[in-house]
Image (cartoon, rainbow, N blue to C red; front, side, top):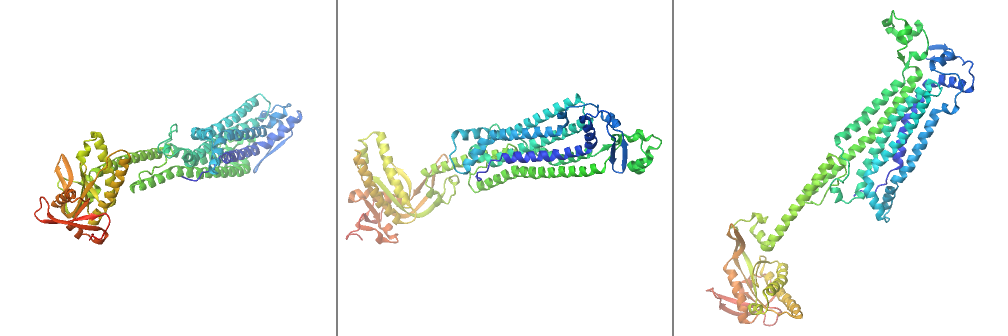
Length: 612
């Protein structure tokens, strides 16, 4: 998980407002400088009450000098010479006041919307307690924050432009200069475009931060394994279209807009005829194309770019390119991080899964194709984990029936590799133990009590055998047949430990009112065949050898010799350190089923003078 971030609110709004004013102010400046001089002088005379005659006005456009009468200007501009309300003359200043006040109100309302999230992340970052109510509020509405901020700003700009439209409508009924209305209408259009760009900028910036920075600190990894409910599906294709529009069409639109603003029609010069010198300056060598036509007819529809317009055009184009560069930097960064970061995390999770770490899920941050891919990967990983858990469970269950050591001895990797007839010959030590007089004891108990008693006894003995590097080949009622592949010392140590475990088992049973039991143990070492016997419908792992039968016979002799554990001379001879245990010679006898004589020893629990 990434460090707890700071919740951005004020700086996003501030940056968006700076972009808005950066787009609007150059346009306002161009229009004011372009149409302002004549309009301001005419306006000043009208407002002062001088209705007799407006002063002569000299218009200078590059090398062209024209002198017009003020009354001609008044007629051309549609000025009615009478007093007007001074409050209606300052539309731009009043509009900027409206814009500024509204945007300040947006910041205040934005604090109400974003305040809980800012407080949540601040407290989480500093490790302070977060109330359940605050946490639940943030969890419920965090994904709606980008849309809420964008709608708030959109409503504010809608209010601003409604007020501007109302003022434009009022201009129709107010005797003002036509320049003022045209200037204000152009300002309205560029403000409307800038508002749309700013709203989109706010939405995508906040959306980027919510999905790339905030969600993992409010939702658990389990919740983020899938797309959160209610998230609006947004295709990568649509995001690319928007990014292209914001970073390509935007600069072109701004440049074209400034080019149109920089054009001045010849009709705005308000002259009846153009001299030859002026016509050559305006049209150059192309003047010959209009021979035979009165210049007053064809010239008024043409346009030109004067020196001031050229300077302001370059300023506006530079501003548009600068704004476009900002959008390119931000949108490229957002799109790169929105796509590349989830893909990198997904690749890292895939590598971990390839190494067997199936619990490494990827967070679903976006609701596009990458989010779908991540969610699909998480679902696949969850299914694989469930499948492998099931396989591991089956393997563990199989190991309870066929010990893992049995599999290793056969040289198999998995239980599915076992086939009927698989076998291997090995020398091992066999330990055979049996509970004495259990038949008589079982008559005093019910079948269920018999079952529970045997399970309790075997549950005590099995760990002891496992701890001494042995494994149980099979249970035969209350009897145990165990194999020790490493050395006879393991079997002798296990027999002594089994005696100790039996003593504790008897003490607990005696305290609970249950009977006590005794066991006999026989130990012999020899070669045996270990493998899979049975048929295709039912197989079992077992060992077949005369050594197994001898171990069982030795266990049976413990009753006759009145001892707990009997070991054969062959087992003692295979021990690397015979002095680590105590043995006492019992007899040399012929065991049932054997023609050769067998030398018997008792395993002593404590070494004494009689022990060898």
